[in-house]
Image 1 (cartoon, helix red, strand yellow):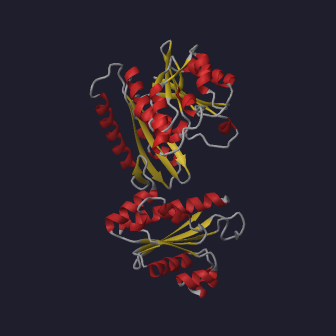
Image 2 (image 1 turned 180 degrees about the horizontal axis):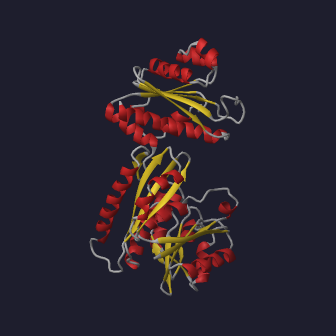
Image 3 (image 1 turned 180 degrees about the vertical axis):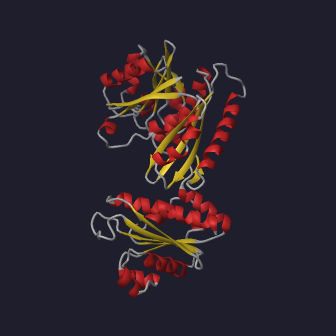
Length: 421
């Protein structure tokens, strides 16, 4: 069954905020077996909302709107929907009572007209009770199609989608199960991966599709299976899941050198799990990345259990003072060299008191390149104090990308080192 998403708000159109709601809703709808065939955004005018709604309903059986349900003058979605569906407005007492109880609980007076405004709902709508905010959702049905209006506040929208909308849609439009499985890879581009798994992809049955989802330094491989028969059995989804799991295992076996995780795994989370399992402490010595690796590591809750910190040394002086890099090494080979990152890695172990370290030094750009060390040249080393491995990468001229790629490749180098030692 097809769905269309319509976001309402001038703030989206002028780029003041980013529409994250549509991405979240698309994922949830897809997991529930619904296909999102389109998304669009319209401004805060009745004409724009109505035009957008007409277009959406002409293409899909399910239309979900977000935004424009607040208490201010620019929040006109309810009034516009009432006009569109030819409905009067009426007070929804349960919503009003819920709003009044909330303000009583926080010991603040209910703002004049807020309760009445928020609880005034088109008569033709089924009210979706919002237990985490003041604006209820609304469910309309017209000529076999469903139109749902939800608040634009993300956590309110997410609550209503999970508690009300998805369950109602699955009951209203029982459809064929859709199952996704995702492999996470790092260090190889999508064209090279496609060549390596060409026979696997060609042999996939027609109801299973493979998608390549590239990002900086990484490619997600997503298998999507749709139940192939119109007749749906009680265990159809379980059968499909088992089939997708088998195909995932086959795919992973073809790419053992670049697969690092599944589904929503991140490199830093996977690495953290390995460190916890081995009982190791990990630290970093960063130069050109300026703390980016530390940022990645500490983005995971509980990272302090295995990641005490980083030493950021941008100058020659601090590399010597804080990490013990020899002046002679820097003078002879330069900061961007294999010799320097080896000493940085050892220095990080000594300074931070960790079991394993990663050192990175490079020319992030856009200036500073040399004939033998162009912009994008990055050396990195991983050491446990006894054994050290190094890697050289030459990225491009974009400073931001070079920093991010250095972080990604560096963490992967640590991951592979830990699996091999």
